[in-house]
Length: 327
Image 1 (tube, rainbow, N blue to C red):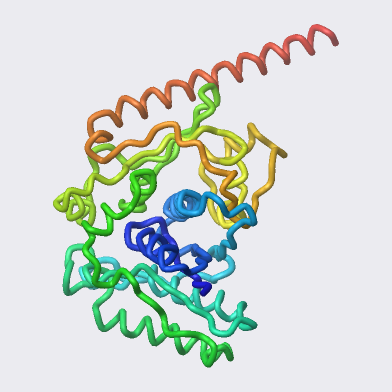
Image 2: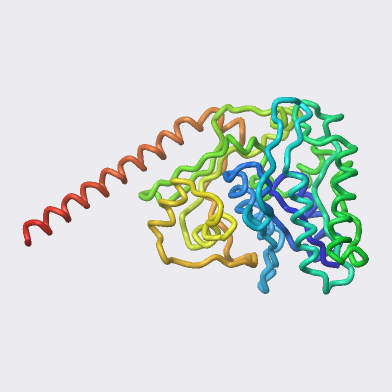
């Protein structure tokens, strides 16, 4: 059975992917620009695709990956972020995205879609970080069915599945292989940053060392020392991923722009996920380790970047002087 799974790279959806593969489902991951910041979209895109590669190392035919960026899903709605019950857009956009993908797949019969929602993320169970109430989640499920119905696909689409809804966060975490746990994203989207070192040929994606969030603190209480930084080798696989339309159309980060400029016209993005395009993660750092070592590593990266810039300027001046002398 084919299942379209909204895979964000978070714990719940990563566990859902594992579970569905175990019971014999053919999963097609989907990622959407959910309105939670460009850095989050890039992190979710890179890491969720890598999670799929780790779980499906023998799929040489490639795995279908559905992506809908900000331009495809449309504009964002201005919301009130000043109150604990302020409604965020993420889950609503996931539902819109899944309904859009399901509508595009109307030739299938039936169509199965799933999300990694968890009841502990509801306002009633986690008021410090909850975005939606339990009633809201029921409305979101209904919203999915209505969008599919009015897209003339309702009779072929199974109600939205939520495999992780009442699972233990701790149990889900330890059920994942270590190489997958290192890829799971649990952080505040706004704290993610990037730095690129041409001399090292590496890109680092990291959170502010020592930064804390309510959700992160809750995970730490359960003994989940989640990853806070990843260092990627700048190779063919990474360049292909960063050329994805969902990244190039909507988001411009200086480090990534510089990286792609240095590798101009090299490689194109593959829409499908192929195991052989596995990213090279040089190092990854848990939250506890990153809190101790992060500042030093970021400083080292930025020093390398500054040195690279100075060398480039010197080379440009030298070239300009040579050209003037020849004239």
